[in-house]
Image (tube, rainbow, N blue to C red; front, side, top):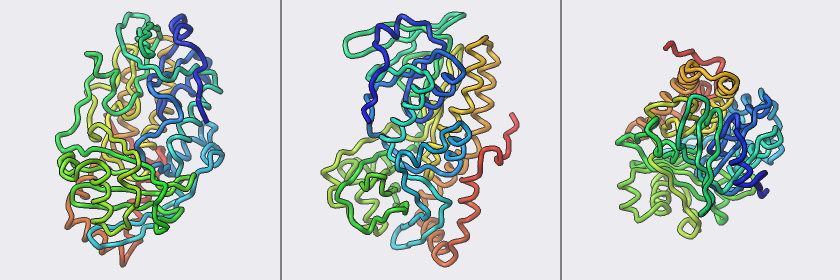
Length: 393
């Protein structure tokens, strides 16, 4: 599953690309694939070498599954060995409830992202891993991007650039066109993968612990290991003595069994999760995925936003490649808001609710005796995009 570069740094610099996509996560890889399918010359760049671990709950709901199927990737999850989950196990302060889920798929980001990169290169996109990209200049006809590998640096040109390099985007920090500001109350994301997890964590179940200072989710991946992803207050992480201790505290507070190797496994943190980009489009540049703004997500929401947004951007970006006009910026701003606005609103409400222990405890009591009360909320999260109410701008 090692994903190799399809060209060298010097070869990339000697081409005038139709599009350079910075960031090979779900959003970037899918945008690159969809553009390449139209015949565009696409360069996909990422600072990491793949496969690589990414902090993520690994859950993919029905809307994301339907979106992948609509572009011919309906078999990708099954082909990569995804595990089906049909239940959400919720615990907080001694309360416990189980909620039915409509066939979520669990797949590690190592396998998912590698599969999407392969899909992009199979469609004709070029891939350059281990490369840091920076926007350096713009003209009427192109954007120029600095590509850096270790001590080597070269400049490549493209008709458009898609910025999809994640939370705290380095590309956005390096230009005056964009800014990304975290919310004052934003929590810190963190994640790890355990080998020695207790048998209490069963296949096909997504576990979620809610605590006074954060929440943690866990599920068994396709390789049998336990993926743990959490979001906690920065001060709480510091008081606990680090990421692993904070996640352990949240799991124990909710009543879940301890993960024996939680202090020995490698933990990775994220920048502040909830943040807003001041702009998601500028001259010949479009911001996509987490780089365009993010809120604390419910199970599978982050990947759903990324996948649907990438597919929505592709025709706008394709048109911009052929004959650029400022209307493409307006079209992307409107399309992204239509896709993400209401869905992130649901997650903002949930995130705010999870900060109230009394509210969480009451909700679990209700769910314990009447689990079907969660059905409307689950349906809302899993409604296909076309069923969403369109936001009028």
